[in-house]
Length: 554
Image 1 (tube, helix red, strand yellow):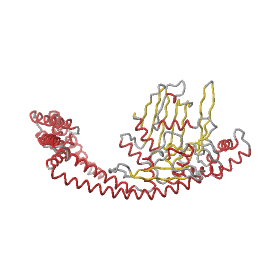
Image 2 (cartoon, one colour; image 1 turned 60 degrees about the horizontal axis):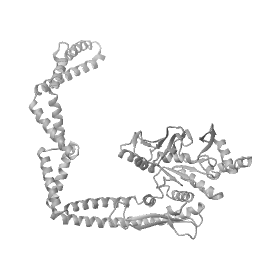
Image 3 (cartoon, helix red, strand yellow; image 1 turned 30 degrees about the vertical axis):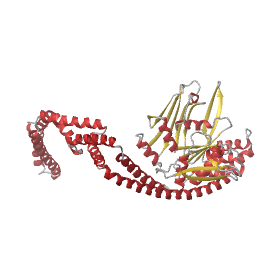
Image 4 (cartoon, one colour; image 1 turned 135 degrees about the horizontal axis):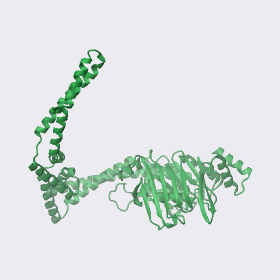
């Protein structure tokens, strides 16, 4: 959920700071006031392209910061962790655009390419309307939405797991089936690498032991000297810890005969004497065993050098060398017995492909059922949203490429007709901004329990509608706001009145400079704004009464 946005020197905004809450928020203002500026700024911080026009005239750069609450969005937290961008559960995005058109993006304070900013942004916010940042038009997003609606997760996971096994088996078969010359070269290289690694006789424990031994031998003189110094302070010196403890023990032990409350102190000092004796004995033993052995040190350092050289050569960490050895040995064994293994692996590939097709067919059937149900429900919702006679369909067809893939063999495409009598066509070809927004809303109404994007923004969802349909749109958006954060740019009083929160955008000209202002409306201010939306510039008592009625009904 978007909880805070800060904008500085962007377009006609000098500075704007806004706290946002859950539920539905309406964004209103007079035509030309700049209601789209907030969406434009948000689009930029989510990875949209930018140019110097984004910077307020006279400023050096525009800055946009957004903070998101991801406490209930584990997928985003996992993504941040996988990309080493996590920061104690926070998720902050920042975009800086210079007056020269160059821009920089940051995720949790770390400079990040726009591709990562966009990839993360698509998981946080979906903007519906005439906007580049629109997931509903992407066919892969349509497939994901259908799978979520149809609860296909388990079937999809089975398909993906089988595909991975098939892919790995295919790779092994290709290695086994390589030409004789290529195989001979690979065999020669593998034999050399395995022999070179075997000569070191490595295990993970051995590497750790060698490293520890090197540290011990390299610091032997310092260790022996330190032990002798500690032993002197503990036991051998005239004012040693042992001597002082013994004196304290004698003094307190005699006094404890007169007051038993000193007994615990006597016991603790006695225990300290025992610990001191044991520590001294351990130090004497260590010092007696320790020795300066430059020959052994040279031998150990030579072995460590060989280990690190091999690790650099194979581009792995030293502790990963034993595992690498086993992988290379397994590949060597496989190639040495390639003729016998090839037939076996080929049967494995065929078995896995057959299993994949069986599971992909089951996924296809589940998608067919989900597609039919989604089409019926979205078509019904479209009628409520002022698209009488419109229809929605979910076309599911097999890919031209029949090779196994992680998502099955289906191509999913949403098709729609906005008017009766017109043929169904792909969503991106026929829907205007307002139609697309309302179709998006219809889908979100149906799929609200499945889609994972926590913030939904609707721009121009009220284009071309009014009256009772506008009230339905408002009700639906408010209902959607009960499950996720909804921001809606609207011209209709019925929609604005349905919101849990209300923001007003206004524009002013001062000293030949135009500035936009955005403020959260209190109860009475909200009545005035909705009355203005109902009656135009002239607000009357009648329009105020109507505004109060709309708010009360919402």
